[in-house]
Length: 68
Image 1 (cartoon, rainbow, N blue to C red):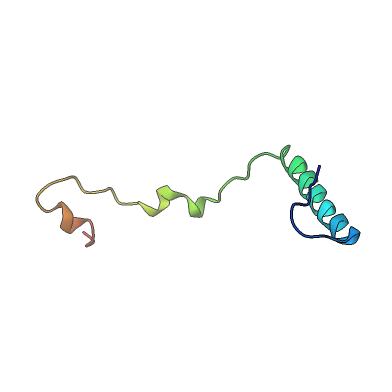
Image 2 (cartoon, rainbow, N blue to C red; image 1 turned 135 degrees about the horizontal axis):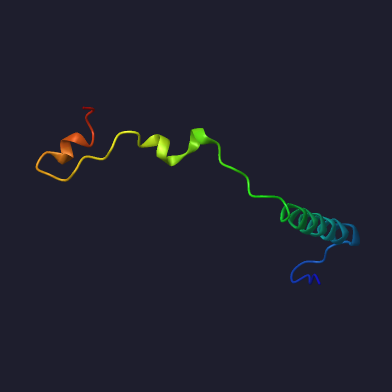
């Protein structure tokens, strides 16, 4: 049920709003059966951190920025 709280829409405007809501609901129901999309390997977070994080120590802060 749709309730107009503010304003005075014309019948055409109300019909357009109902059509949009129905189309979105149908699209959501159709997409629910599909398997979840796989992320491409190039955007994997493990690919970003290829080098291990330095262990804590007296000079660890310097090794976090400068390449070895």
